[in-house]
Amino acid sequence: MSRNMISYCWTGTRPRLIIQDPEMTEEVLANKQGHFQKPPLNPQILILSRGISTLEGEQWSKRRKMINPAFHLEKLKGMVPIFSVSCGQMIEQWKERASLQSSCEIDVWPELQKLTADAISRTAFGSSYEEGKKIFQLQKELISLTLEAMQSIYIPGFRFIPTKKNQRRKKLNKEITSMLRNVIQRKEHAMKTGQARANDLLGMLLQHNNQFAVLENTNGAEGKMTIEDVIEECKQFYLAGQETAASLLTWTIIVLALHPEWQEKAREEVLQVCGKELEFEAINHLKIVTMILYEVLRLYPPVIAIYQHTNKEAQIKEISVPAGVDLTLPILLVNHDPGLWGEDAEEFKPERFSQGVSKASKDQLAFFAFSWGPRTCIGKNFAMIEAKVALAMILQHFSFKLSPSYSHAPYTVMTLQPQHGAQIILHQI
Image (tube, rainbow, N blue to C red):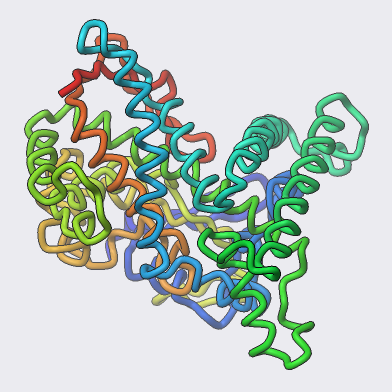
């Protein structure tokens, strides 16, 4: 282990260990003995969601078992037509804008945010997706107000003072919760009376929740999620699925605009493998598109770091770490490390993933864009299928290059975003 793989600093009164060594990272993420957990959360962020990403221990384990079946690959196959509908609407709007001169300039960052919000709304809420979109618009405002509060100095108890913004946050949260409760109760009733099937994420979540309760306890009470729990997981669908997917797609479009040779290779593959229709089996055989998406995830990971905290004294390889230490696993730094990826680590070279993720770097543990071990992102397959469908459909209808007005400035809010937008010149094919 080289010295530059670990470093140490203080954040205020808390010690922080920054770990770039892949084997040490694996030890942290694969640990099942409860030595590590998420750092103590700022209470203000819990207003956004108290779903699976905030839980720990036995509570997290049970919730993960309940939610997992909804994200199985077999279930996600049925999502491809839904992704296609969302993407088709966006493409038709782009065509209208490009129709006069066969090309136009579009900032794809807000466009792809709208696309992924629409897609997650349709896949999460099925026929109630318009209501889902309204909920997500309110949640977007709540996220903005919450991030604003978190960027200022944290004063314990200040969130309870009835300032204008605190009252707005409280009102938004109440409204979002109420709307979600109505959607969930209507869905439950429709499923019980046979008027609806469990063919969206909410339906599958409710179905598996009931099945899990029966397996855990014959009276179905102890292991079952309450309606409040389901509401929090619905909030989580949006938080986890929308911004990250939009970030991945935006950086992919930017990178392919910079590398027209790879854009053309990807387009040829899409037209050859998929033709004009997109089906799951064809999407699954897009090797070049997959290599490109992995390389974009390496260069521009939506989540730039994973944060952990020692709950009790822990041994990480030869280092003994006392309780109360914050750990940072910097995905972005690891992904750009020449010692792991070669001297061309800063370059866009999708061919490094031609033999899969494990052989792309000098250490098979170096790529953990979707985390690792028990905490591997539950929506990994969902995100990759959505990205492949959207990218394939865009390539079928447009070629694109960067606009002269584009300024390359990646920065992090909740995800890695283009600070000044992603201006692209689209040419209709």
